[in-house]
Image (tube, rainbow, N blue to C red; front, side):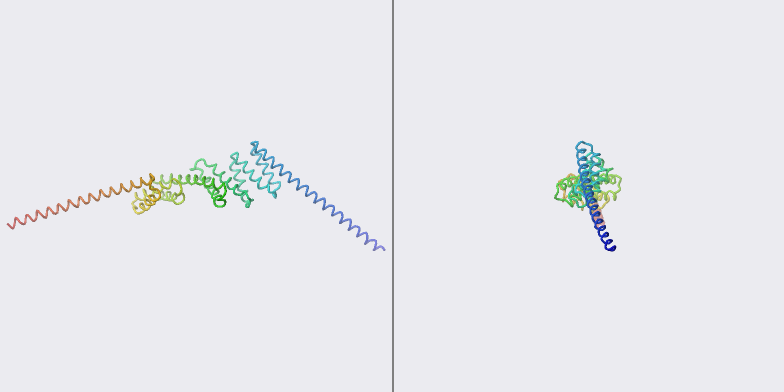
Length: 297
């Protein structure tokens, strides 16, 4: 009977333990759900505060609240949106370095997000807006170009691609003008190889810019100057084929025409000298023959 009673007590204890654990589990689950709900509400509250601050012009506080919203609920679909809004807040007030930091983090963390095209566009524009002097801000030019190219290559059918294409043309013009400036400097200093390399860079990398015509003419000019006539003619033909109506083609034509006239004048002088020499020889022969005839008489 004692053993029987002990078994019953064990069973009752086990049953009570199961009931107690079950009750605790429900309480924990309930508590977890309450916490999740609470985080969700906190995230929404932080996001809305960010929007209000942004509308009120307090961009730094807005960015802070958007960052807070992202951290509170990183699994939410609102987390990447909050990150983008933080970057946009910085961009609006010209805090470009902060915007760039946020956007570079965004493209790494949310590499498959549906608004990645906008992130790249805002990133490229943040670099582009910092270009004040192309002679000093070459790094910003290159970084802006890299990100605009990403938009054109990955998202060619978006509205961002249209603006990216326009800004790329401006960037290429700026980069080409820098090459031309340095090339002209080398030309004046008679550093022919360095000048040629700069002008060739314009032809190879920036051939859609307004500086292509001048670069071709300069290459003609240099090669003519150093006596490489065949190379000069090659670039002159290329210039004539593509830009026959341009002022740089006219300058190239004048260059060739001037040299042609100079050579023609030299040839005429040679012909004249030759002709005079022949006349003198002929005159001497005639005089010698007359002298012989007189002796024979």
